[in-house]
Structure formats: C-alpha cells, structure tokens
Image (cartoon, rainbow, N blue to C red; front, side, top):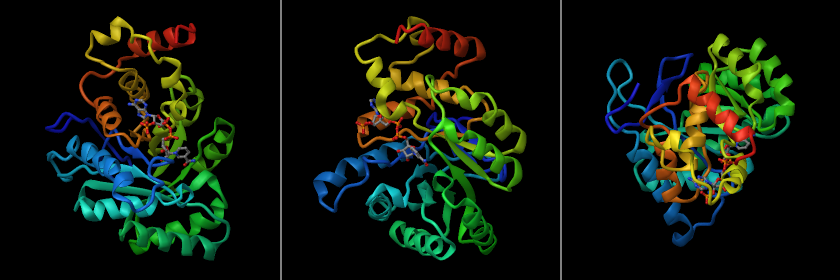
Length: 293
Ligand SMILES: NC(=O)c1ccc[n+]([C@@H]2O[C@H](COP(=O)([O-])OP(=O)(O)OC[C@H]3O[C@@H](n4cnc5c(N)ncnc54)[C@H](OP(=O)(O)O)[C@@H]3O)[C@@H](O)[C@H]2O)c1
C-alpha cells in the first residue's frame, strides 16, 4: 500500500493498522540536553519523517503514524522525543515505541510509568522488553497493561543474532504483537528462522541496525551504487540498504537511527517508489558477498 506522499505502509498483523515502512531510531543521536542547538536538528529529523507519511489512507485506518523507537537505556532520548512531539504538536503523527529495561516487576512498572511521563503519552503505542531482560516478569505486566489500555501493543527486542534462539522460543509460545531484531544486507541470519516464523505467527517485525550501526555505510563510502539499482530509481547506499531490508515480506518496518535531517530524508526514500523483487534481492546479496562493498 502507498500513501499520497509516496511512503509505503504495511499492516500490523495483530490489528490491521497500517505502519509506514520507515521509522526512526533514537539510540545515541537523541541523547542530548535541553539546549536549542542540540535539539533543533532532531526536531527537523522528526518533521522530515512526518512530512513523508501523513497522507490519508482509505479504509478503517485513515492515518498512518510513523514509528519512533526509543528506550530508557538511551539516556535522555525519551524526554527529548516527548518534548519534541509536544512542541511540534506531532503526537498524532507518531507511533511511539519504547522499552522496559530493568529487572523485577515493581522496577519495570516504575520505569514504564516514567517513560509515559517523559514521552507525554498515555497510552504508549508499543512497549517492548529490551534485550529480553527479565522477560517473563515483564510479559505478565505488559499483558495486563494492554488489557487496561495503557499500551496498545507489546513486543520483545534484541540486537544480536546470538539471541535468536531465545527470541524464537518467546515468539513460538507467547502472544506478542511485535518482535524487533537485527537484519541487514550483511547480517542475514534472521531469514533462516525468525522472519518466516514471524510471518507464520502473524507477528509484526521491526528491523534495527539496518546499517550495522553505520558500519555498512562506512564500508561503501565513496563507492558507486550498482547501475542496475540506479536504473530503478535508487540514489544512495542508504536507500539501497533499506530497500533490501524491506524486500523481505515478513518485515513490517525499519528504524534507521539518525540525528541528521538530510539523512532522514534520504532514509525516507528507502520506503518509497520501486521495491526489490526476488531476483534483485539475490543479485544484491551476491554483489555484497563478493566483497565489492
Ligand atoms: N536491543 C534493541 O532494542 C536495539 C538495539 C539496537 C538498536 N535499536 C534501535 O534501532 C535503531 C537503529 O539502530 P542504530 O541506530 O544503532 O544503527 P543503524 O540504524 O544501523 O545506523 C545508525 C548510524 O547510521 C548513520 N546514518 C543513518 N542514516 C544515514 C544516512 N542516510 N547516510 C549516512 N549515515 C546514516 C547514523 O549517523 P547520523 O546520525 O549521522 O545519521 C548512525 O551513525 C536504534 O537507533 C534504536 O532505536 C534497538
């Protein structure tokens, strides 16, 4: 599905709600103080994101809000997101995802309440258990919170393929709406079991580290993108790497992290226009693995 401004959306399987395929990660870049100089570019990052995804959709869900992913682990990022959404009157444009990242029931509840305050959101759209830390305890709370309407969706996250066995066990056994995991042209282990399983179990997939925390883009710095991706309208490596991730049909949304409005604009293009078919996907994998990058 495509909205009027050109950003593709995909449905959250557990609800049918459309989500624009490009969101924004806040690790590092959004951990700043209150000064205007630090915050101005971040406001522009969010504005750029929202400008690319606010057109009306047809049907039951008429608006698609962009996912912003944060965590209490990311220093001041939750407060910065909350303040910027408030100042820009952007709350409705944002699908806010944060995490619980602590041990114990009471500590988890206290942390999540604080996140709600900092982000000035009630309900929180998506609450995730960060890196599966004390997940059994928090899952119980999240299921209750979802029933009470304090959160709309619940999920689990990790950033390392070494955790995939544990992610898989939770995905198989528990009623989660979302899983967030690492997947990129370089790290493709999620294709083996987790992405097919997510499709089977109707779990939405958020992809983190699409640029390997920037390392993939550093590898290709100064190198031309292949002519056969240019031919379908791609202009940058960032766009190519995001389109690769999105070419897996089990992926719902990808959240490149950035503090740069120019990079955000470039990243939004990864969710627009032509998509990669299987043949193009395979060609790109071969190209990347051949060491040309
Ligand atoms: N366990 C977890 O739950 C977990 C773990 C890891 C990440 N995450 C989430 O996933 C998000 C994404 O991961 P990440 O931020 O670590 O890594 P990433 O998205 O793979 O890469 C971010 C890096 O790429 C750069 N970048 C972004 N867009 C660019 C562009 N168009 N051109 C050139 N450089 C660009 C950024 O620098 P600039 O600021 O200069 O653009 C930053 O250094 C995080 O922000 C976080 O929200 C969650």
